[in-house]
Figure 1 (spheres, rainbow, N blue to C red):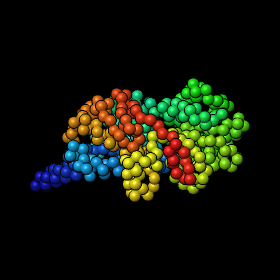
Figure 2: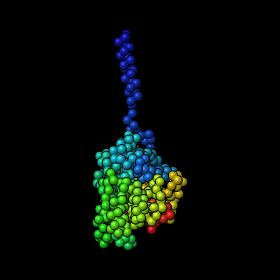
Figure 3: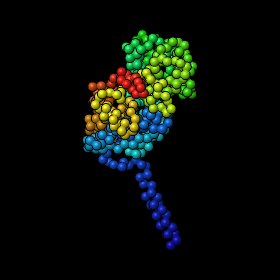
Figure 4: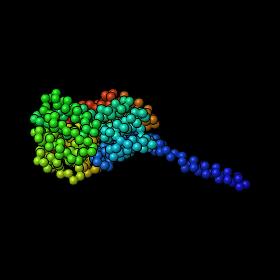
Length: 391
């Protein structure tokens, strides 16, 4: 009898264990009648302005889409994971979202994490659309499954040089860039190439790099540019380092024209930064919050009401990315009961057929080629009285 009871007890414990462990993978979807879209970007840390803007801009689009009846009658479930602008954390975030049931990925937000995650989405054959990771390498990591909503780095570099030349903004140009960052170094290389074609005078001694270990003190680079008589400094860098450069240049009494790219967007919200130092700063961006376009005005109004700040181009690109996903799903006929891989196979050719008016495109809208590159025109803005003003 004792042996019988022991066997019975063990069997009962085994059943209990099986019940407790069942479904613990987290891979079962909560709602089989919804599209599961995940997002990745930094919402904490030094680059939090970018990731938070992407998260918020996408959320506004999702709210609009769901309130209007969803995509082909199906709602969107949305979850955003913080990667702190770290490649390893971004891969971990991707795995978390896969367990959650993600079918389509929006992100990652920044380039280095996006490169690492693109290796994973390519292997899994999951459609990935990044609003703001701008390196061409992002697309080459995929199998045709990765798409960009932002300009590529070469596009930003060449467009900046052309704009400076066409508007005769400088006699002598210096550059400060991050040689350890593919985003910054990629834009710098293309800018220099196009500057030569435009007969711009880029002073070789004033082309100065920094690395992750030396991104808090730029006095040496600034001094070289000042000694060379540079009246314009091209800064293909992120807003954190740009804010330090502006502070140190002011301390030195050096007042060139500062010209940046989309990574500069966010400088007005840097904690403890005197925004008066950014007065006159120019940059190329796909989005101008002061545009009189009806859709832009509606978006800016909603964003201000919901998040108590003016949206930047990262928010606008994420908003457009979500509407691109909607349009591609509708074009492809993808359904909620399809696997992520099957959805990807359906949406890849559809992305090359859609046209999204969006916030960051001109009247012709946003279109994509089979490589995943977006076609749209950059806009020039200048910081005036603490706000971005279209030029």
